[in-house]
Length: 147
Image (cartoon, rainbow, N blue to C red; front, side, top):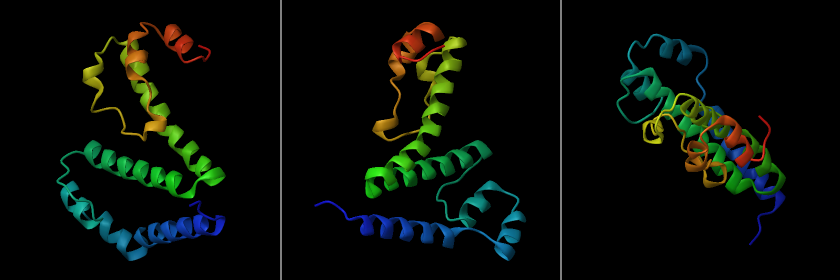
């Protein structure tokens, strides 16, 4: 059964309202600014896990954002979903930069796992093809783009 335009808007409005209610403002934001450790900050904003580095904490926030945008794409559909799909393109380009740097610096693909963002299947780059290209020019030829 196809979702109606109204259902799509209701879903989006509900999700955005929930996000708005989780935003930190005013006095609550001041309280968060007083926190001195990452584990405390994680607990205060409702993230499970024990974060030891800023990179781990940021990575979790980015993963959550990617998951949320992906759910919008799935539930909104049609043109609205395309907008959120375009927002995911930013993270696809981040992964492309990781692979290009690795290619330029001859870093093995296995060493990149912790740097590549988990994306929905529609935005996953062909890492094997990118890494086996041997050069940026070959990589661009394989992707049908210009160097």
